[in-house]
Length: 398
Image 1 (cartoon, rainbow, N blue to C red):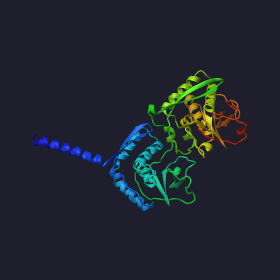
Image 2 (image 1 turned 60 degrees about the vertical axis):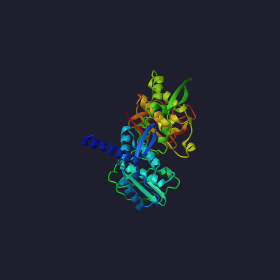
Image 3 (image 1 turned 120 degrees about the horizontal axis):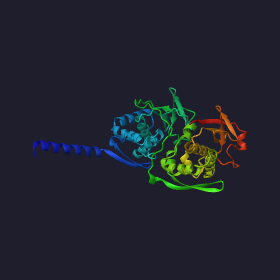
Image 4 (image 1 turned 135 degrees about the vertical axis):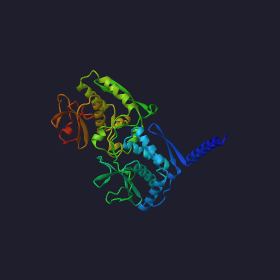
């Protein structure tokens, strides 16, 4: 072999030796993320201990060590996944939680787990803040969304909403502010959105079949739904968002294809009024009714797909599903009405029917998607709610 050949051979061996060293210095994490296989390499320099007491100085030192580690490849990979799978911010945060759990299991060291979430979200561009009080570490994110059930604070005319309240719900201190950790992260400027306009593209084999049915005018209708329990997991800690955000959460593709085309087939030859009535009866009687407080001990809203997945649901959940189906199949103007203890929907027809609501110059007909004491027809409102004040909480205009 001549000198040139020896040189090339040496460079090749050096290249593979360098690659081997890099692989040896990295830890490979492979895990399922709602049906997708995620593969991430984490350099060993990024895997750091944190056994110190919770104070600003210790967190500052931990941040500096993480910031000086080889973290760029991991963060770039996370952002590539976000782009590739079109992850909304809320779903991306679930991905961050998953990798933080892999690096630092929550039950082993909660502070370290939270600091990894904070660092990775910040380096992904989100404006994150940490609050400390005694042994509590609170994670906040800047958001302009209207969230009704989570603590927040205001800074420079921006709201910062608590992301890990579910871990502190019984001991959260509302009376005294948490001390903020002052760390400047230049790239962490973005607001976080709780809007979920797209669900992950779950693999077809991750779905199960669920049979539901109801009777309409004496005839039985059956549906073989395809459901994915991963949807419940996505929304496990999802807060109570504003009604516009809530009513516009979609179905995943497989669930959609197992339900909506079948509904369209059944109502294809019906006039609009009868088709809406069919959807109204479907959301009333294809599922058991149970109040959230009896199931969860507190108010919780299901996304439309969760209402299909779970065996029981209440008025908010049915209103969300009914709204989604009417919008998807007929795309008619609608308003959502909130009473003191009830939520329902009113639809704008060409001509109002029965009990109608005048709103912004248009009449909307009440279509009750939740079972009541009487089997209400389109345009009928229960006696209890006729005498109660209501608020229009969302107006949908196609």
